[in-house]
Length: 232
Image 1: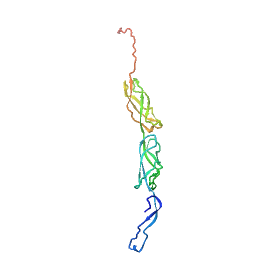
Image 2: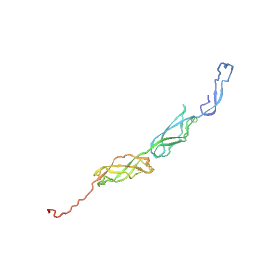
Image 3: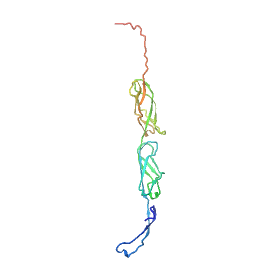
């Protein structure tokens, strides 16, 4: 047996209770004990890294966890918290590379094991859902369904990101007739800007505005001799 179970080179190995056997064993003698030298090498540990996909959050930090296999009982081994883990960049994409560096072991018996100091895994970053606020101007009946969008704003967009909507959207009353709190339909809302691919617009409820009656003027004219009837 080794003097202890820990890793080392040229470690003493103790050999006891040596005895001979066989038909001619009685013709020989041997020392009942002895010593030798041997080495105990570090055992490999496998750190299994797992990442779960996330919605865009303007950071390179992934959602992840890990497990360790190959530890002999009763040893307690973990990895130090000095490692780094990060996506290759913060933007939306599928099967994005995640880099893990500076992996090191800790624990009372950590020196008896070794593991890779780096790893690469993959996961997805999905677009972040956002909503919009629309501010509409009421209008006076003009025989069309058009409506003027006064202004708009975004909810839940990170302050460092720049996005807008394309001017190709359409926005119209459901029909051209006068009505209070009249439903407004919109479509073709498309995000543009450097960070537009990291977001998508989700429905934020119905829009309403007032379509008011149009004021008209009736002109009356004094028609003289209206009581005369001329027959040809």
